Image (cartoon, rainbow, N blue to C red; front, side, top):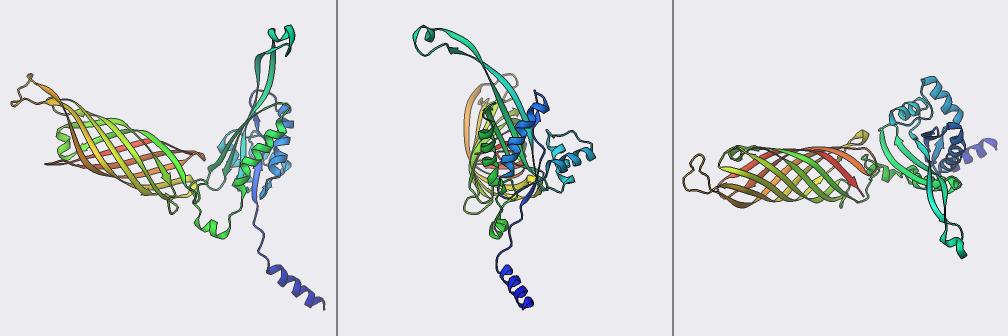
Length: 359
């Protein structure tokens, strides 16, 4: 009878899905920047209690965290990512939360009274406030999952801690098998549509017949668009580029190049927050020149006139980027432009290095 009961219990237990594993998380407290660690202890205790209440967050005990830091010879609490990752790996934690807390005094003038003569008199007052900055990091990838900032009066730490925990909670939600299969390793983007702006300095080198007009160029690109359109990874947007081209011939006094492009591409996500995205662009390339329009080009006797040339173009770019936070990524993009003139085909290679901001 006992054996039958045991078998029944095992079968019933197997009929329910296994509970999702929690994220083992290290939080040592926030580094106090401009006041004593002893005074910050009570603040950290409140924040820790609220983080400990986040669903699927398995917080490493304070004693275990302190022992690990002592063994590794690290100063606790950590205030930079390298220190936090080292401490978290020693505890085999999958997540680590680190950051800083500062205390500032704000001075302001207030009326002595709301009514009577006092409302015309001012007195100096002071208000102390805490500023919290926290970072949630995926230990395996080394990528920042969330950056949280909060400011609160010194007597309102608990509501601020609740807001911090509420903002961190979505990053501890355990994905279903289907979500895990399709999710992106590029930050926390997943399948959600994300809008972005990007910009960077840009260098260009003319190729082929275009080199007879200019030696090189320097300028910038600006653009924006959206990612994860229709399917995860698909992106589309618009971009404007400008380059001042350095003339290679004295018959050209100045040369400006402008590109207006619509672009589309696909982002391939890599570990550690890296990604690669081939991008194809189409649009118009505008060359704005001040050049000698004389029938005979005589040295020293140039008659310069302005002219604009509008040519359709296509470009291909390979963008390598690294997500440094949930909103910011840095990128490097080599590219190649081909624009089609009436009698020739102009080409130039480009190199952009800048940043992207996700909304």
